[in-house]
Length: 196
View 1 (cartoon, rainbow, N blue to C red):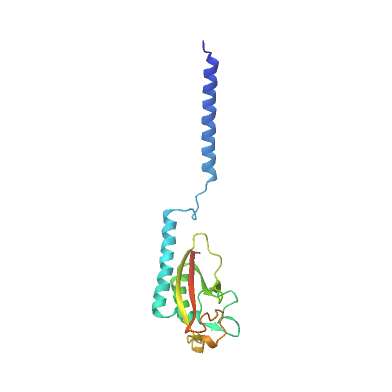
View 2 (cartoon, rainbow, N blue to C red):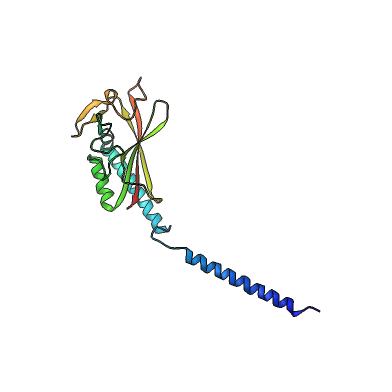
């Protein structure tokens, strides 16, 4: 004969297991917070939109010819971009046509951005020089990049925008990696954007 005690023990075990499962689900729901930064399709849409906006600015301004003069907007005596701190501009884009477009397109829409210039050293090592530093990008930042070729006869820009000495005779942060050719260096401009 089978005792009823064994059936009651199984029933009690099942009820206890169910209560533990329900308690853990309730605890998990209370611990999880939904915030404006919680991943969702809308935040992914905003990130994609910001990335396309940065890519569009870079493409349009490369076509307009405003990016290279901004990259060459270099103060030789201070070893930094004209009017910038050692680690880049902190209030927005540089005072050039490209910087104006960055400010109007991004900053005026409450989109923060950093602009970095990557270049290659003679030994092939890749280095970074900051042009704009508006802070640390969020985890949801997007990046747009574009490469530009600099030649020996490209000219450094003075603070008023006029042409200075050619790169091959200037003191510039990126070195001449093609001393036996017209090529000076290839730089990659990176624009990192995120919501303020």
